[in-house]
Length: 435
Image (tube, rainbow, N blue to C red; front, top):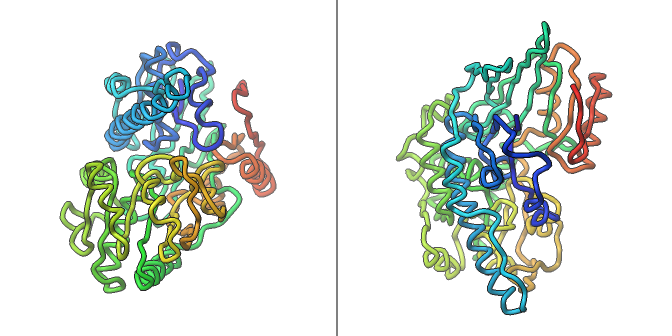
């Protein structure tokens, strides 16, 4: 079995994503998918292309979202390879093949299988499984696995990405209370977020100040999860009179489809969202504009002020946000507002780290716009949230700390040891443990 099969992002990602898998995909019977984000699902078409013929198990919302994600990712792979091939041929080099194609993504779809939260599934080979709501994005789950070992039963929990309490729209994370082993994410294992209300106040101030200066507000955001949260919050702010009618442009066909998918899964909503969110309410207060065609996207670059432009990717390494950065990043009257984690080596990280210039589409662009990081909008639990999730366990599991930058994972591992006395490991890539 395999848990998640995501694309690498940031430094060395091109080579890492194209490297052979460290296992034989044809020998995998089950792929359990904790949620749809590309760093958890993005290599599924490559897995299938390389021989996987098992079952992909995920929640209903995750299977709907991952279909959108993989088709979009494949389209980006094809478009980027076409552009890189033109450059390569002009330089006398070999064509650049896409990591996978739209046809490869399509071939992955029949392997998807849905299971509701809380339902125990059986493989028929002494293994049971269940998803708990991880509270990260729509459909996200922590995976419980029970393995029959002779007369004993051992349990492993894969945290997936753990959400923070109070995230818009979806429920707070569910917690388990016992396990022999935990494989746990550590994205924000060394820091604390601002609280949501402070970040909302900061967002209001950013919008008002930027519009007063005659600029635009750019928000790089993942099409699934963060975009819907931001729309929800902006809509509420206008309804409450804290912002006036504002023009919001969602420059992502994927985000439009994902928003419709969110609205189709009210079973994942928290009580507040169930009361106020329906297919019409998103556009009740904000002037919401979805752009689909390339021409519509290019036209946004003619808007010089009073626009909020939300586009992917969230780390600025792909998607249409790069074009908007090229036209707005050098303008002191504009603002770039980051609402999520920026991995080392990404364009977003270089901007957050206040590089004087960044290279976009081969051109050096000055970083003159105001740069903001709104940590309160993160869909990830911070250090306190991760520790709180772990505190629910009333036994002494071994904990494998994964899915974080090396320094962060090591620091969080030490914190777990100090606080709970659990045995912890920070695995190297490809390292093997016998349980």
